[in-house]
Amino acid sequence: MEPQTKDPDPLPRLVHIGEIQFNLGEVTTGGVTPRGTFIFCPITGGHFTTVFPLPDGFGIHSEAIEGLRAEVLPGGGDYPLIHNNELAELNVSVVAKGLNNDHIFRITSFGICEWNKLIFDMMGQTAAARSTEMGEINAWQVFRINTDSPEYAWLNWACIIGQERLIYEDSRMAKTHMKLFQFLVK
Image (cartoon, rainbow, N blue to C red; front, side, top):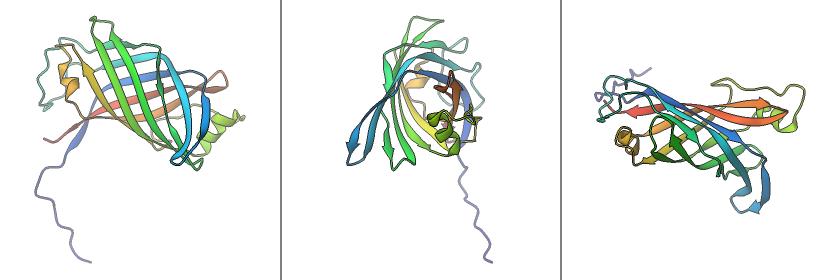
């Protein structure tokens, strides 16, 4: 067996910076396209938070004196494409408004959710349907955030990845909750 070579460059790391939750409305199924079945899932609300203080080695200047607390406003949505009833290609667009400031945060994301028995149980409303824990489903999103907030301007340049869990309430997939991680290269 050949020895593995060690990469001389430092490896990037993920640092927990916050959380986001989307409250989901009733899904509308569209037709089949060459890339998959189109559906629309309205986002009716939720919340977005960041930690404070920011982790060591963060590297982006922040004027924040507290963690962000923001409300996800109704009117956004997820516009996924479903591939072969096995995979959802996620495409989210929402707006949040700061609760501890009056600034607006435009949040977009894309990602993947591989469907497994837990998700099929939720969609079929079976007796086994339940909320998932982090890591039980292969679901992730990459976020882009735009804001006019000087305190949270660092979000405009942050490379953010979300690890997802699904919340089952009232006999349906009612919410999606994500831990947010900043991708740091040093």
